[in-house]
Length: 87
Image (cartoon, rainbow, N blue to C red; front, side):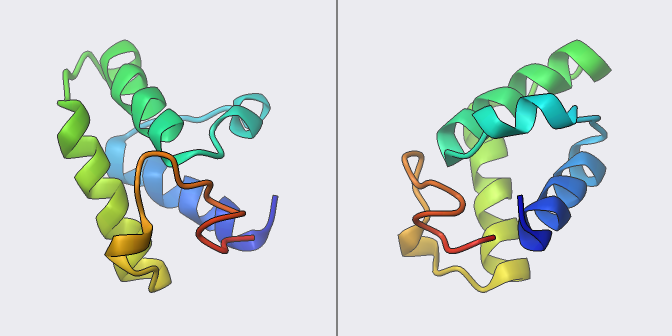
């Protein structure tokens, strides 16, 4: 996992008030999987029910604003490293 990916995870943890364990990260390489994880983790860790679409839009915004990835390139099937170029 590269520096961009580590920073992205830290941003997600701060944004949503979560703790994402290192051992689970290898299963979160696809944007859609990450959205599902964050949505479920918010409910389990914080008791907050967030809508899937809200989490998805927030993650797209982070990827676009913080990493310069074009919005059109980000979709639920995008792989964070292979498709979006994060390392």
